Image 1 (tube, rainbow, N blue to C red):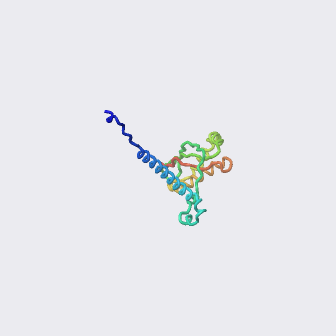
Image 2: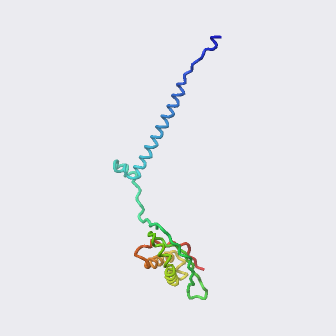
Image 3: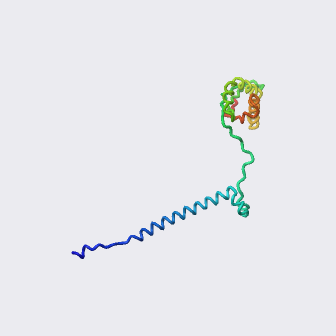
Amino acid sequence: MAGEEEVIKVEKKPKKRKKTLIIIAVVLLAVLLLLVLLGWLALRIGVLGFLFPALEERWPAPTPPEHVEKVPDYMFEVPEILVNLDDGGSRNRFLSVKFYVGYDNARLESQLEQRMPEIRDKVNKVLWDVSSEEIMTAEGKEQLRDDLHRTIDEMFLEDEIVGIYFWHVMVQ
């Protein structure tokens, strides 16, 4: 019986080696991925082009767009305005316009609220001069946008109004 109770020792070194190899492979893969990402980023921002001009010729850095429209920090909603168009015909036509005023200075909101009756009056005067044929074209809508922008901007300090943004322009 003494011989049967003999304990056999088995070394587990091959398993430990396997775990070590997996860890090394994962670390190497992560380092390689990081190097590729940093190289791509350096190429996109132009650092590699400075160090290696041949790379810049082959893959030039992106150029910024020529005209970027400024996005206003704040928007003020002008309630819908409905006017009767005088097209000279027997049929009555109506123009419905709803838009937002874009601006960057936070203090302008209280001024816009206080002067809303005056703004509506000036907008009505602009809309009364529009014909249904003009407003049906894209150029006519852009002209209306420019006219409204200029009219409202004149009521405040220079260049405080960033833009006019239509919700809808509708002729009925």
